Amino acid sequence: LNENGDPRLQSIYQPAADDSEFGAYGSNYPGASKTGMRSSDPSSDDSYARVNILNTDPAHIMILPEVHFLIAEAALKFNDDDATAKANYEAGIVASGAMHGVGDISYLFESGAPYEWDSGKSKEDRLKDIYMQRWVAFANFLTIEGWIELRRTDWPERMAYDYAAGDPTVGMLTEPLQNKLGSGLFPNRIWYPESERSANIKSPEQPADLTVKVWWDVN
Image (tube, rainbow, N blue to C red; front, side, top):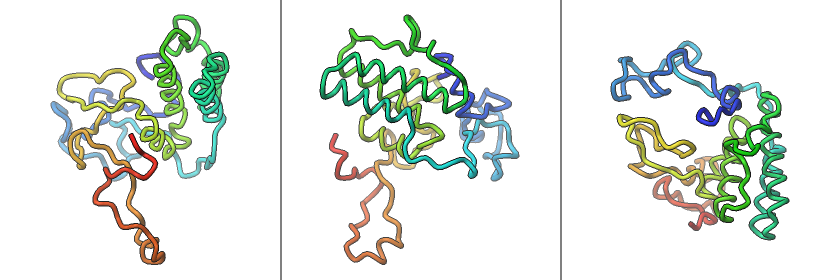
């Protein structure tokens, strides 16, 4: 978003007062000047970028950008309907900008702009453009669905990142600085709650770890 001049970035995050640490925990970031971890009260430490999510925010079941991107995906994937896919891809971006309160962002998909729809791309690459924009649209509104989409579409691409070497590839999903699951691994599920397992005799067995995929995650 930053690279593409996307104003939604300012709605999704509260910028840090000092951007030299890239939001990392100070004592764990190579070359970081801070000596301690982030404060237990995030509101008291403006040295880190924070997401703009409050417990008073409305809950969403489905959002308009999601509807447009689902239509775009279905049109392209099942009907090879490029025109419908393009129209809904662009409508989804506009709707996302409106939800974030940043005004009309249709200029971002004009000719030569970073989100321009390219009918000459392969179907796979056009689908990736849709997946990326849907993932961005979920930010702050349907974050769990964003995680589900990552597992369903495998996009944005997950990549390891050498934090000491420099910035990651724009648009890619980077591995955390400290990955408790192991290098290159991401959580594919959550634990079944103990309340469910104790009250439901047919509750599935707890998976060996969080990298075990759920039944529909076949790729």
